[in-house]
Image (cartoon, rainbow, N blue to C red; front, side, top):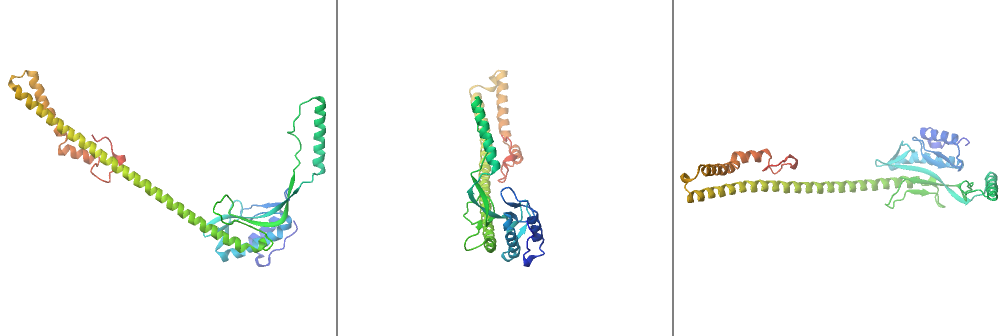
Length: 307
C-alpha cells in the first residue's frame, strides 16, 4: 500500500502513526483484504483502497471518545471501547459484494486434467470418485468500499444496535458519535443486567439461607423431642418397674421369696433407680450442654447422637 496521508489534527498520536505503518506494510490476503488485530491498534478488515478512510476513522474515534466519556484499552484482538467501565470489542470491517466466480485458466486446466483422468479410468473399468475433483467456487466475495462498525461482537438478544454501516445518507466516517453513544447504551444495559443478576443471585442465596435455617430449626426441634421422648420413656419404665415390684411383694412377701427372686427384685429396684438417675439434672444438663441442644443458634453440624 502506498504511504497514507496522516489526519491533520492527530499527526503525532502513537496509535495513528503505528496504524499507518501497519497498513502500509500489510500484505493483502487472497480475498483482497488486509487484516489487523494488533492489541494496541484498532481491529480492521479492509481492502487497500480503504486505508486512508480507516486512518481517518481511527483519528475521529480517538478524538471524539473523550467527549462521550469513552476511552480505548489494549486487548488481544485489538483496541476495545470502554464506556462506563464496561469494555467491548470494536471492529471496522469492509463489506463485500457477491458476484459469480469466473474460473481462472489454472482452475480450468486442473478441471480438464481431472476429467480426462476420470475418462481414462472409466474406459479401463477402474474405480473412481469425485472426492479429488478440483473445487471451483461458484461465487466471489469482493470488497465494495462499504465500511461497517461491529460493536460488542457476540450473540445478543437485547435488541440493541451494534452494527453501523455506510448508507446513502451517512458514511462510516460520520457515524463515530453514533457508535460511541451506542457503546454507552450497551454499557448501561450491561450494568443493568449485572445488577439484576446480582439481585437474583442475592435473592436465591437468601432463599437458600432461609431453607437451611428452617431445616436447622426443624432438626433442632426433632433432636429435642427425641431426647425428651427418651427421658420420658426412661421415667415411665422406672415407674412400671416400681409398680411391678410393689405388686409382686404385695402378693409374695419378700422374706418368703427364694434367694434368686429376692436378688431379682433388688436388681429391678436398682435398675429403676438407674433409669431415673440417667435423667438426673446433672446428667441431663451435661448432655444438653455438650450438644448445645437448648441453644437456639446451635449448628446442625455440631450434633451427634444425643440419646
